[in-house]
Amino acid sequence: MERLLLASRHALEMNGEIAPEDVFLFIQALQSPPDVRDAFLDRHFTAREKAIVLKLPDLGANDPRAMEWAQLLRSVKERMHEPPDSAASQALAARIMELTMDWFDRDMELIDKYWSLIRPEPGEAPKVYGMDAEVMDYIDSIVDLYMSNQQEGKSDGEKRTQAD
Image (cartoon, rainbow, N blue to C red; front, side):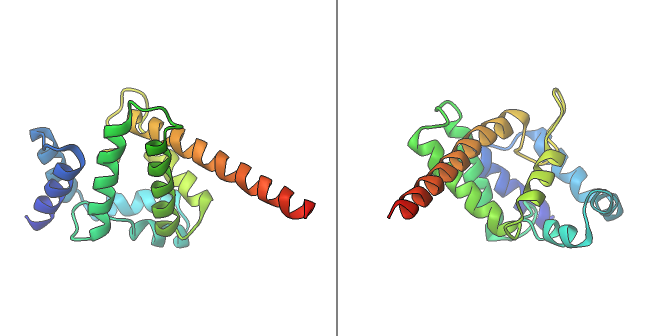
């Protein structure tokens, strides 16, 4: 019951409301046997990667990172109408990268692998609560631009250092 309440609290923070179907989704997720999740993780991740993935914030846990993620996703949803190069969108991208690099032990390959595994197919329900295709596409667009700008900044800085 506590996990259901925590998941509902995080969903409320993420979306500003809780739909009845979300509550049923949370109940199903909480009742699913752990061996189903373990089999999925074993099939797709190495032991090291699995250990990292198992430490990710859980919306059903009393983990402050889950609330931080819920608030960040709410900001993403509120900004999806903005172009990826807006200052607000780029600030979101910077925060997303900061959190994911921390949570995934700075392993970009693992981040990419996890991201591709949780991406829903067209018309498919989200595999991770709050991460529908539209949200993921927007995050992709702002983070790709952010990373590109970071690379350009590093290249420009390297050029200035070499010229000095």
